[in-house]
Length: 253
Image (tube, rainbow, N blue to C red):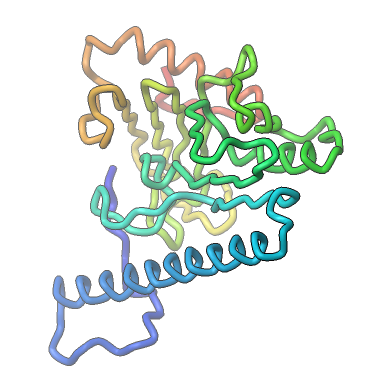
């Protein structure tokens, strides 16, 4: 289910050298796009450093919470892709770095599972406000203080809706635990905005992250993982119900 993305729509701002065709032209566009992206990343890093230096110089660093994060991770050629959308680790993971000297030990790392739905409850917690009842997610403040609350999540749910739209990715959803990742490409527009009404045969992927951290070996059909597939599918449906999402029934066990 690795679909080659069309690069033709990219506005690269600079015309390619004359005579490039086919793979050469595609390679040139890819290099332009990725290098422009990395220049933006470097610029952000430089200016975050300027911000932190200013807080230190003004003597207000201890009273300021600085959070560095993003909406998704980004492929830099991993799995033959750039951009994001897919549920593979390079795209699914996102940076979340916090500096708050009053509460957070410098250099500390927390391996507990955090989601972007936790961001708003976390910000409200630090502001001394209660998260409203309908809001999904929980405050990450205990994790930042170095403790993992009892009953903390060990699985998370992901969904991508825009089937075969501008980015050429099949619609899919899935489950990520600390040990496994289960992905279901239901591959149907379902009336989603900017999706293309062109259903494709559904497909499943299962990765054992303990032995295959780069997600190169789909073991969904391996009989040795039959019980794992059953357990993960049940957990996937549980999380869907928890967030009031509707499972796609075709091809589901």
